[in-house]
Amino acid sequence: MATRSRFDDVAKLVDTERGFISREIFVDPDLYKEELDKVFTRAWLFIGHESLIPNPGDFYTTRMGEESVILCRDKKGVVHAFLNSCRHRGMKVCRYEQGNTSIFTCPYHSWTYTTDGKLQGVPQYRSLYDANLDRDANSLVSVAKLAIYKGTVWATWDKDAPEFLTYLGDAKIHLDQALDCRDGREGGSEVIGVHKWVFPSNWKFAAENFLGDTYHNPSHRSVDLIGIGPSAASGKKGRRDDELEKAQHVWISFPEGHGVHSAIQPENNEYIESFLDNPVLEQYFRHCFEERKRRLGEQARLMPFVGTIFPNTSYHGRQPRGLCAWHPHSPTTTEGWRFFMVDADAPKEVKDYLRRYYMRYSGPAGMTEQDDMENWLYATSASVGTVARRYPFNYQQSLGAWTRDHATLGGTVSLQVTEEIARGYYRRWKTYMGGGDWDELLGGNDRLTQRAAE
Ligand code: FES
Ligand code: FE
Image 1 (cartoon, protein in one colour):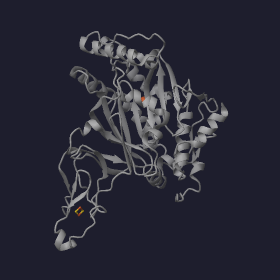
Image 2 (cartoon, helix red, strand yellow; image 1 turned 60 degrees about the horizontal axis):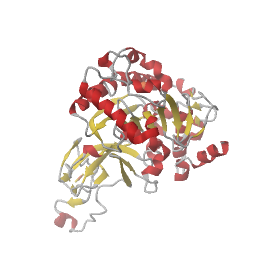
Image 3 (tube, protein in one colour; image 1 turned 90 degrees about the vertical axis):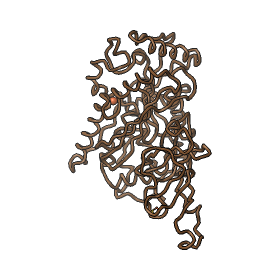
Image 4 (tube, helix red, strand yellow; image 1 turned 180 degrees about the horizontal axis):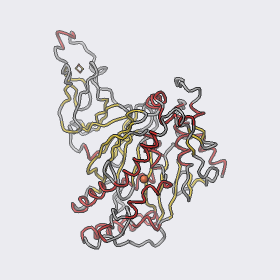
């Protein structure tokens, strides 16, 4: 049963019909605690990538909500995720960010756990426990469900949660574009680095930004005026590759709460030469473009831009390519993790080039990401005051100008930037906060409404 909020009705704080959302949901400590309880223990959360743990015994310490979680490949090669907290007195059994081990030994009283999370060793087991401790009941707490999708690893604490692909819904078509190889082969990506940094903002500012808030483009005016993009060495300005410039952009909302901004290339789209000063890069990117077109045909016209998978996983689909997890620390503090991705079999020179470009663009020192973070952190600090909190944020953009279900693109599609995607995201947030069942969390009612409107 859902516990009651100190606010009479959380639903009143989020008025997606009229387009107002209270600032309280971005700053209030009680609502934040409720989010951890009602959103982060139920939704599927992105926790890492297989390429970070390629060998038996490899582990990567990750997070789900505020809690530390060990992502580990056991000695048989099976991937697990456990709460990083000893069953005896709660000590972190693993204090490293990543590594390889045959056993996790708790530093406090030395209980040991195998790489599949089972309690193995208990000091003085015979003399102090009568050799009679229930090892299964005292093993590390495992996530309820874990899914590996094209190398990415996702988990949920809710045993009743639907399978990951059901949860992902039609947003899969768009996330796929970020996870597949640049030449159209399925999967095949690896993580070449993870940036982690803490910033003073509510986590939803970041998640919402990636739903397709293209409206904030003026924030990036400075990086648009200089050349930090893939074509910069050829003397071209801008922060991205040229492919997106000539495309039809689409903004899509999904009933599960996800939202994306993708782009559709014109028919008979041709490769744009971008790396004339570097034949290795030019050959690689030309090959990827042409091979992708050959493999996917008409579908190759769909290009990913950005998206957020509810609640806190965002992606950059093309250049720079990667996944972000926005981990909550407090109502007004977030830890951003950016997983930078490349094709695992790309030439070393291409990976090095992309690594430098990704750092120029994204992460704590990335020029584009710094623009975004300034907005999120000042918007947070300017919303904590007693007076500021009386005035809700405005989400009325394109209210009522929604379009329709789209068979090829999934979801409901708009051909212009729209806050309907954010409204859909918070509508779903409200369902979680109200303790909705899984049919409601997947947007059951919204699906019916959309169909009725057609
Ligand atoms: Fe881990 Fe005591 S807290 S062994
Ligand atoms: Fe931005």
